[in-house]
Image (cartoon, rainbow, N blue to C red; front, top):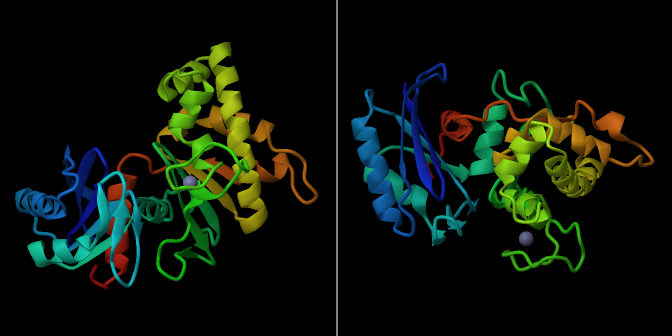
Amino acid sequence: MYIAGIDLGGTNLKFGLFDDSMQLVHSQSVHSIRGDSVACARQIKRLLEEAPHPAQRIGVGVPGAVTRPSGRVNSGNLRWAGVQFGATLARETGLPVWLDNDAQCALAAETLEGGSCFGLSSAVYLTLGTGVGGALLIDGKPWRGHDNAAAELGHFVVHAGGLKCPCGQRGCFEMYASAGALGRLAGGTRARLVLDGARAGDRQMLRFLDRYCQELAYGICSLYMIFRPQAIVLGGGVSAGGEILIERTLRHIPSAYNYDANTLRGVLRLATKLNGAGMLGAAALARENLVSC
Ligand SMILES: [Zn+2]
């Protein structure tokens, strides 16, 4: 059986075809079609037709909330409000579709062999990118809430009355822990340049990274207090900073009554399935879940 795994981002659509052992046998990347969900479904249909083997199922990860049982998707990046994309794609392709939040897909990839959460029963996954996304693993299963939209970990408040967030609240974690926040805390320097400079030992860039890691530590401490997970995994673009990101964040973990930085050493870790994790996780979820849409 072949399964298509699709990482449908706001900019690019990454299409992968996986075999029975979840090995990637074919991939393609195209620009995403935003706004028009029917055109997007037809684009995926074309990619399926161009693939070397026919897929029997499709898994799709999207940057937004996918609520169940309605299957409605709200995604600012894709300009979708309440779009039932799973049903549209199933109709256009005639195949069963599993549609999910992209962080849920990334977590699913990390629980596979070689992933940062393989064999664990509890984990908190954070995507530190354009926004901050999240997914939770509790008792060995993804925790999805009553309507599948749980784990919006970018939107708990770390600074009461702080910066206004697009979600409507003030002081959300996302406003201080996204790639854009890193750039802002670095006085407008692009996040990638800060990360590259810090890795190369540039003192100014290390100071900028420290400011960011302080903010990251606030959120991580709260998440650790709430979930007490075996792992807190950092994924997304900022995690390209590598081990220095972990080390600098640990420096800002205060000693609390029942944990300190040493407790979090080993808990706080980097995602290991960075390239293609979205495609792989979407395909893995489609393999596990038979329910359409
Ligand atoms: Zn928010």
